[in-house]
Image 1 (cartoon, rainbow, N blue to C red):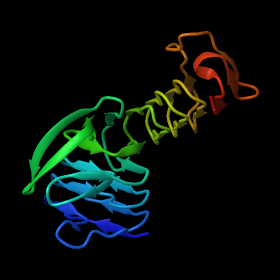
Image 2 (image 1 turned 180 degrees about the vertical axis):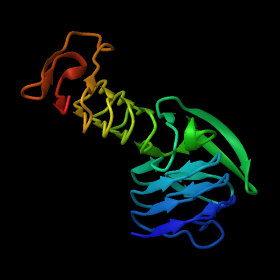
Image 3 (image 1 turned 90 degrees about the horizontal axis):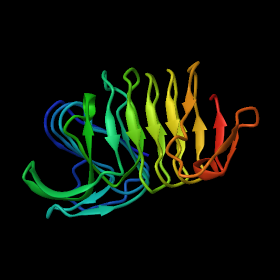
Image 4 (image 1 turned 60 degrees about the horizontal axis):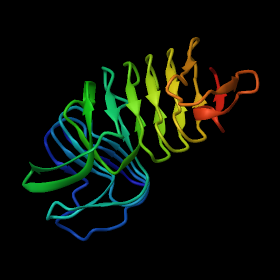
Length: 223
């Protein structure tokens, strides 16, 4: 595992585009400030774009701007002072000219608020919210891990067998379809929300289990 730390300027981090593309491993990439291209490359990586309008890529990028997805990667907004909003289920296709590369963003999600403002995310499966803000994090049809950390967060797993971690604060957790793990965390008034289920649900907070509808197969702790 390697750690790559950038500067407060605009940059490609880590920049392997002009050199041989290599498998780095399960890495931590912190681009700091600036409008950056933050790349996980190979492995299951944690990528922090920091402040600025960043392109966060969970995979490989070549000099032609073509992205090849690789690994199960996370976008990390821990250091954002304000809450962030990211919905991985809302995707778009576009080409952005950044730092001399026309990056072909296929299936990109957008970020809003705090350090996520202006961000585009491609190939990201997991999300880590801010330490202090009230975050709105939504997954996709994949098995996502959404970590709200501090603040009163709203986490929505959508489809897939998701892990929702409320962390500190009074959080609202929506597992959606799939057998999800809803973990309220240290808050005193965390909520599991099944209002979107098309069929009735049964939830037993004593045993921490759910059946029926979107609750089928769910486990609940700290709710």
